[in-house]
Length: 107
Image (cartoon, rainbow, N blue to C red):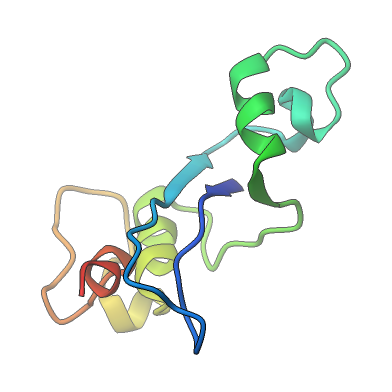
């Protein structure tokens, strides 16, 4: 799973009240070299390549599980699947006890 994060969230002593935007782009079941910014010489993803130039790109990202819903649930909560209880793909929602990055950012 390739992850691209655009934007910064203010934190620490230098934090201001200025609102910042964060865009999390995940490319599930995509080989790393299928996109231009990761080395594909054909450059089939020009818009993602431009976004990557002004973003933080995690080139060596790893996942806690090879399943989309549990992996994304972990990425957005910081919890392992047994803790957030999403252990398989399906329509079951994330429990309210598993707070997400978006909830923390909103606060």
